[in-house]
Image 1 (cartoon, rainbow, N blue to C red):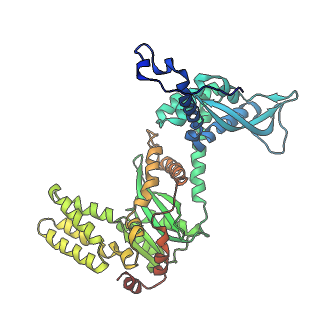
Image 2: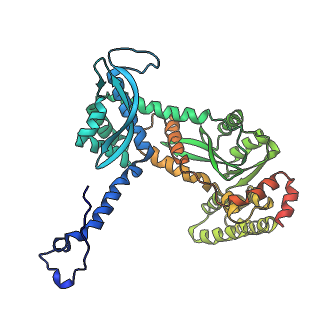
Image 3: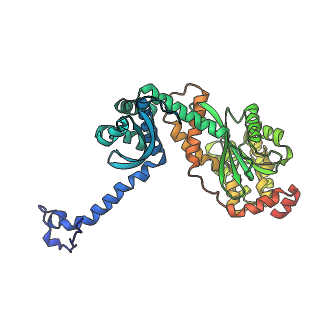
Length: 425
């Protein structure tokens, strides 16, 4: 390829007229921009990402099955036979995406996979696939985009639907069968999410190095003690030692607290979410009092355990006459608002462990993914989509903030709580 020898030159303002745009008078000035555009197009593959590649490869596999039948390892069946796979490239909109494509052969040579040929040559089909991969579309739009694409690829609509159900079911099964026996979990967060009107309870663990792990899901509310207990029992069967002392970060659910006590006993050190507590109190107050109470409670949580409890008790006495419900809410579970303080946890790690916000990040991915479905048939369908969303969010998990201070927590968990309180003092 012949190397360009064009050079940039400075164009004086008097050389540019309304009838002569800058690039018309000096075409070489556009070369750096063209280079940037080329780099941007190459980066689109990163934008599409792993999920996009897996979807395309699944469509190619289904298309190959429509020609050669189901793959039977070690057996030669039919005139068209499977012959491994190889690297390939398809067009998605204006981008190129590298994929693994199946190979088919018959007695005369290579047999073309219809989907691969279509994606390499049909621009309209490529754009429909790009619409699926890049846009956050609802399932109603999937019906317009995926199924039209399936027809063009030679795949039946029912096969596409069955494949989506199969993949989400496999994601849920994979999650339920994980083993946590080798994980040194020092903290477990539990919180609920509503998907399609169905309550889903989620558990997320933090190991001794600060890495996060999705532990499990259960269909039902955190207010249902049986649902919580069943999830905890399942986690125990998957290798989580419920007799080991660790921190449990939960909302204000009494059923959740009761189930943890039943399954874990005194080994569970429970920290109630401070954000949930503030929200529970302020929603029982008129708007003109909420900001002041929110500030007072936040200030109490920054004090030592005894000083913070005293400040909250004083706030409760102040609210009792006019707002008895709010006053009672301030005192409910007050000791467990300061568990991390008594364990000597401070700084960035304390801010991380004081709330259930840690589980809210994957929850946001679940809401985005599950929001594509407009009609949930049952709770199991909601569970499948929730599992798919959590597993997608898990790919971007990072270590928790303040993870360097986890040694303090681990040391304190191995000591009686009264000795840990001395550390905090």
